Each structure stands twice: as structure tokens, then as C-alpha cells.
Length: 437
Image (cartoon, rainbow, N blue to C red; front, side, top):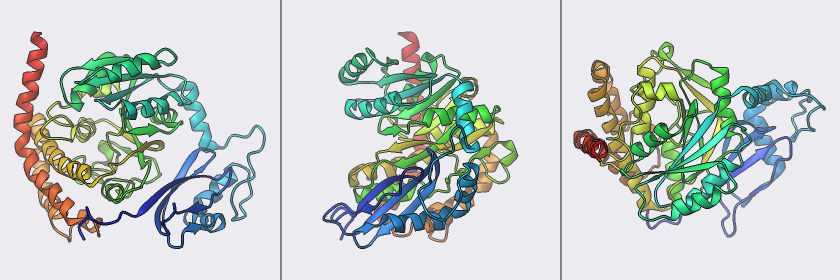
């Protein structure tokens, strides 16, 4: 049976706040089995994520509590002690002592008091329904110094403009159009328009956790040398098989845990900025200090959605920051919830785009930073093994993943580097046309 014809399993994404209660988890009827991702928190602070599978229709609260204690027991003991709550092995907690703030929450409080002004730049094109949900998530943020800028990229109608105009009556949200099609053009328009010290780019198919902006600010406050911050992208839903496959290929399983990581020239020996790409997050949840993103020349307009290369502009910017001696903080407490593509055809386009974007990204590194070519040559053998052979690390991580999707990804890998020169010329023509108008 082909992937298109198979009956998709039901997946569930659950949030469990230990200071309230541990829920019972049930598979939606009529399903009796389901993949379950459980995001575990304590007083709002993410602890980690459980990956479970229901086999008989439900998971009682007591059994889920046992699963949580088994995986996170050591860390929970420390957190409970910090909260002056005795660890008994049972969940949930009995609440905080009046007036007590655990140390792991004090960083959040400091960010609320001292953090920089942030502009959330939300790039969109012809998806007002998705955009409305994304804007609701930003409106619900706890952070007091957050502005929102919607960049409408080459719109075919005025639905987005009308939506933002209506919301702007009661919210701090601005609107600008970028007529040149392409996500990088839209990202760079946000950089040109917004005046904040920090710019955070948000996709229109995701919803930010209410503490997202605060936790982005927290990373900049606690690591003052940071030029960029990335966070976690968790699925908003897992209702179809393509969504489960996307999460398997590009989600939480790619080495991005719940511990902060700081990448800099000092970590280059452990994690080359070029390959394998460090587990530093993705463009769906990233923020830059203005001077850092301006120093690397913004986003490459020959990369990304809306170009023939389809992707890679976020990876290129993050890598360029590291190659130029900058510091990047992976802050797992900054969470966005992403609506993965539901249908198989959309996932096919994503897989092709990821392949093209990756090899186009390497072509862009050679063109824009030719000094990295010797390092790329040195890493080429490992990269080819990981991407094309089953004994490579990347494919070992994808056991059971549809072979057809992997073939599309490899096809994109073979195309992207050759497409980059044409995409670069097109970007230059668009820039020249705009300059002359």
C-alpha cells in the first residue's frame, strides 16, 4: 500500500502542567492506537517531551505520571527542591510557598524587567486565516516590550491588509507590503522597517507560546554576547501520517533537547557551522540582534520560499553569524507550535524544497564566503554518506520513513546547487528594478 493510500494513524499533542494536574490521555474515537507527544511543564517552564504510543485507547493519569517520573525524575527532584516542595514521586505538585520564586523562573522575571524591545516580524502571503491565528498568539504574549509587524509578500489581494487594519484598532500591529516575491525579501523588509534592538521572525502557520517572547528576551539578557537566539518548534497537531513523518524528519528528534546550548567559535570543533548542521534550531523560531543580522548582510534573496531554491535562507543566516565569529543561543524554553503540512502532496513539496535549499545553501556559502570552501571539501565525504547511504547517521535516524520522500529530498539535493546561480541573478535583477523605480 502506497503512502497516499494508507490510513493515517491518529496522533495527539498534549501539554501537562505539573503544578495543576496530570491528565488522562485518550485516543480520539474510533481510534484505539495513537502516537502521543506530551510537553511537560512545571510552573510554565518546559521540562521535556515524552514520545508515547497508546495501544488500548487511553493512558490513565497515574500511568502518565509514572512515565513522566521515570524519564524526568532526576530533574524534577531538583526543580521540586528549588520550589521547596518535597518530592514523593507522585504528581502533580502542591503549589509554591507564598512569595517564593524558584530560581528557574527568576530568569523569566529578569527578562520581563530588563529585556530588549522586540519586533515580531510575521511574513505572510495570501493566508489570512492562518495569519489571524498567528496574530492571536502574539497578542497573548506576556512580554511588555513586543511589537508586531506583518510583512505582506507579493499579495494577490487585499485580505491580509484588511485583516491587519481591523486588528490594529485594538492591537499594536503594523503592516507593510513587500512586492518582490520571496521569503527573504519579506524578512529583509522587516529588517528595514522595524526599529527594535531585536527582531524575531515568525511564520504564519504557527502559534507562539505565551512565554515565547519573554524567553527569547531571557536568552539575550542572560547571554549578553548573543547575536541570535533560536527556540523549539513543536507540532501543534499530529492528525495525519504526513504530519507524523514531517515531525520524524525535521522535528524534536533532531538532537534539539530541552537544555540551553550556546554556539560560538569556541564550539566550532565540536559542531562545525557547516556540517552536520548544529542542533541550533530553525527559521520558524529565530531572533537576531539588529547589528548582528545587518553585519552579515541580512537574508540571501536567492534562497528561501518564493525562489527556485525553495529554502535555506534561515540556515545560511545562522551559519553566517557563526562563521563571522558570532554567538548563537538555543533557548528551548522559547516555544512555537507549528501546524505541519497535513497532506502528502504538500509534504512532497517540503521534502524537495529541503533538499534544494540545503545544497543551494552550500553554494551560497561558496559564493558569499569562499574562505569556507576547504572546510566544505573536507566535510563532503561524510555529508554524502549521511544523505545517500543507509549506514550514514542521517538515514539511520529515519527508519520507516517513506522511501519516495527520501528520493525527492535527494533529487532536490542534486538540483539546488545548480539552481543557486540563476536564483542569484534573478535576485539581483529584482534589486536593480526596485532601485530604479
